[in-house]
Image (cartoon, rainbow, N blue to C red; front, side):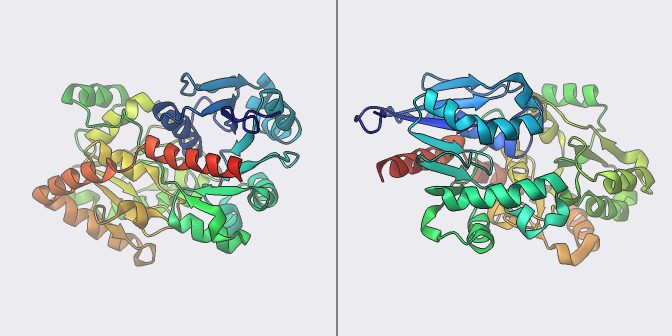
Length: 381
């Protein structure tokens, strides 16, 4: 008899296998979920977090990491384990409910289930995605969402997309905005100076954070920077690992008329990011589409104003704090917005203050509370 059926604690198996040793984007959202679950106190819930040997995830009295075989560190191994072995492993851990925290569920799982859909880009814009991701998520993600008892999404935009692209009833789709990890706070001058020295950063810079891939629209940001670089002392700093189909963005960096002022740092450990955010004058996130958009909030939490596009959920996340530059307006409009903001130090400081207050509304504990309640509802149904 399950713990739920016997009136005891609810035991939830959480599929965290997507997290590797260099997390970004969705992986960091999965880490944030565990961080939030460790902070809140639903004493009737315990969690078995399935992880690869490469992952370092938050732990707590109610969170037990379950190590999958080492071969799950490779994508093919992870998918095979997820679909063929995870259901049995979850049952062996006494799971009453299974949560696919990154788009998919094991389709052989027949018990109560929850799945988090971070975005539907593989369905709405398959041209922005790797072929294998396109095939895997278009089939398995769609079936997972339709089989799940509840679907979690990070934004109202993504909720609408899930309903439109997959045909899920709105009653089954729950919005749980992502959070900002506590370490993202304004860094001291000393920490900023150390980061500048370590990464050879200039005294003043604009910042982009995200994997180098077509959806991040770095070509557009570079085109805007070229229009104003002669007027500014700033460098353009890009933080993000090499992603799929990154040749165009890499060529844009190398062939830019201001290539000597573009600094690409590749992936950076999370403990260094607050100082890099804090040292920037502005964070530019002019992505083509985001299911949420955590980067602008992290920048705001570090006291750095952000500028975003109107791609997907970014205006929803920005609120009335970060200027939204429509993609259709082109790099000229982004350049003009950057020029105007950087010319008014008082307005920039005001946006920084408002950004700190805005980012404080987004916490992993709030994210986890919503999901914990969904677990309770699904288990009790």
